Length: 335
Ligand SMILES: [Zn+2]
Image (cartoon, rainbow, N blue to C red; front, side, top):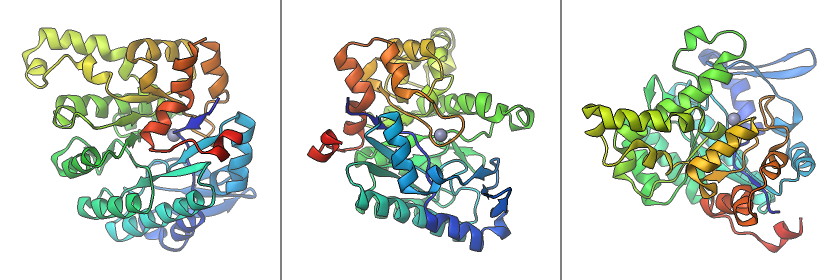
């Protein structure tokens, strides 16, 4: 089956070099410890730059092991939002250009999702134009920038541009909320990320962002975090509370079903629930490689659910190809 992974992370060489040469004043660095290079960006634990993070050959080998034909490449939290604008803009360009080179070399295997310097919305819109114009297939954003969630009015032009130009928006959490109580046991990731995704998704619903842009296509990482299990609670609040009802045109669960969700749930029953709640057309394969929190068996998990063939095909690759405007070519089918 034609498998397309929408959730993966990569650091192109030019991005890493720019951190090495210009990152220090902003608290970013690349250091060698214990024989490994570590990338340290503000607001995120250091990342070991092992080959699957930085080399295409290693990434291709990993995809072959997993049985995945094609993959969207993205940056990773904390994106470039931690940097002053004069560094954030060239970092975004370095990432996007590096990914575009890979996309040009392996057009059947990789496409890029653009990172944007959202600390300056005008610069972000210019970079979005440039990167999409050069062939990137979507934009990849964190949940908040500078303490403001992306439903804030300053980000409205980004949603407008994405909706009007049919550019999919991939949302990856970055732990902002409750950070001070999630400093141990990897809680920032296991609990912070799923909550953070639900916070932005519900804010996009209640702020009217989804009402204003009916054609907007948004993909939520990690199976939407805790959003799916909140659908009933949100609807109950809609029935009970005027301030919830007044905010939007329909019950919240109708908006929940408009999002796309990746499969990175780490639990067969959680994925089953997600599929039952939103339907297989809204669920797309994700791996989260090469992080240690990646799903080690992304395709086997889907197979175990015993979906009907059309539903399985949608989840494994067809919906992702439509989202990414990425046709199946002869080479992909053969490979
Ligand atoms: Zn991820």
